[in-house]
Length: 340
Ligand code: NDP
Image (tube, rainbow, N blue to C red):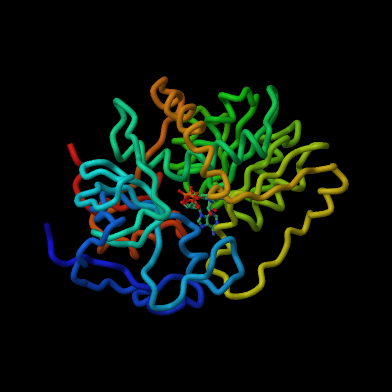
């Protein structure tokens, strides 16, 4: 057992993009366990677009992370020492904790992580921790797709978007159109995941592309990006369509007020329902979502890619990939070896 642990600390609030000194890595002695605590050895950490939001001074769904605090993220790890009745040594736990290779915790924010049989820990964590439940809730419970609908998804080749499009097909959508930032990502969506069409927003105007690919209009628009894509979607919505605001990643680095959307009038003209959500609010229902998602994973109905950065020290650089499209699939960090 090591005597010291590595932790990332919030050092300096970024003005826009995350910089070299936004977070700093420090080594500290691991304290002795008290009653009711356990020591977690981190294995995988999820990097999420919202991590940048936690570094802002915005009024959000969580208390702001104070400068000088340890950075937060979702981690799955192994309980290596325990004085906690709910977390036995040798078991896996998942939760919102600090960016650390070893951490002593009271267990607050953690739940046991029963790894599904036949699925690797990386796949189980990558799909089930955040992206899968987000795609499931956002599309099925908020977007409410009906058989025959046309569904548009932005950041479609990302962790959430790729799952949304496939769940849309499972739900009977007639046409699923993805928007992504490269030809390679667009080809993956159509050739491997079964999207009906994909638009490379770096190559063509999104509205032109959507007019071509959605001749019957859009019934469900699943927004991960914001800006031009949201406006284009709003422009082409059908009557009584649903607009799911899952993420607005194109705005997370903005220090200036964000303009638009300009076609907001269509919320009235087309009688739209527009709804945002935060997946943390649905934590109590994760077992239900996991059962469905695991079933689809086992049946080969859900395909996904993991983009795994190696080592806790790579976490800050890896996080920046999300805001440039440099990630290919669910972005996570492998902090330590998966237990056998
Ligand atoms: P992704 O794996 O989708 O990675 C982010 C992708 O966003 C990038 O790969 C890039 O894809 C695209 N992107 C980044 N910046 C821009 C930009 N300026 N313009 C256009 N596209 C951009 O990440 P996640 O799946 O983890 O997250 C996707 C979205 O879902 C985020 O907005 C996130 O905040 C949201 N989310 C919301 C949750 C909730 O509870 N509401 C929970 C989890 C995620 P490309 O190469 O195609 O440009």
